[in-house]
Length: 129
Length: 297
Image (cartoon, rainbow over all chains, first blue to last red; front, top):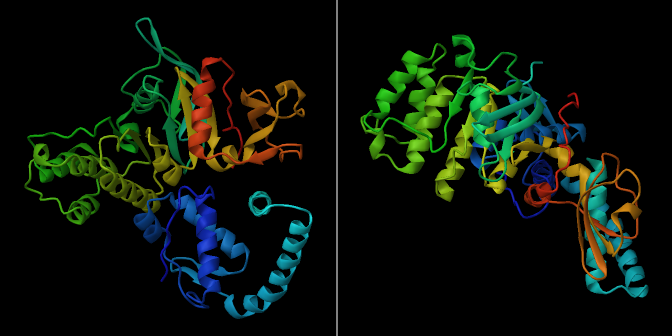
């Protein structure tokens, strides 16, 4: 069983933080197929957040096909991310490295690159909601 | 489904002082509603109108589909926790539960006893001897033990230390998860509201400035920073909530329900705290209240 935590200063919506933490746990192999996520009640009793926030996060994960809800039992992991996604890491890293090279070539400073990345990251994260 | 709270042009006047003005709200069920605003904005008045302790001077209010406090059945459906979580100092913890059992037709004694045990309260202890956090928890236990469909809480955590506050909110959220209880909660602690609320009402000087689902509200507001310019030169469809200028830079908080158009500016989202403060600060210039609750779910 994993535990969630919230960073109020992250600027990321609480439900997205939960989604990200589940994804991260899958990537790190902390969660694998068949594992149960904490129940909504367990989460709210631990983190003091709105139950709807947890439900929304779990629904998002369900839509992504990462977990499935068994009514009256709980929410279970249906897919393991780690191996598949690790093989995807390399080409993504390659693309990112190429992009960074172009950004530096265009004269952007480290700070400008970071600002551009963060704002684009946020914008696309919002679009995906 | 029936709205938690439906108000039309609701007004409340104490003598010559207008405590609530032209308040129109429609809060769909299943929400935890955060009620924020400066002291004296009308938060307590709105909560007292909702539980029936006050009758409106003008306009109308319905809670869970009925006039507040109209009948015993209505009283059983709504729990109210007044400011500073009042308890009876001379009565013991067990007495409070007995009182709850006698006064409330839907009282859940199992739940109340379990909660008292969980909180490590001594049933024989006089309520007056409890700590602030314990008193608040006891008051919440009694209010939740009546198994209301709606809990109205007036600044329940204001006097609590951070640990007691977190514990209180955990228990409150557990109650919400267990019984689908809707909650309206007033507080100055926006960081707490950010965790637990999915609906927000900003009240300033007796008027509703902003009301709607937190997700929609936060998605619709942006802070844009650009070279100094007049708000009128911004694209149509952007409602300017606030504008600040330096000699060469302008900072706007804008609202749009459509995606923010691309422009020659840096845009960022606002935290709930920034958003609430923006609406509080700009309240001096009277603008019509925004009302989002018509959005059907």
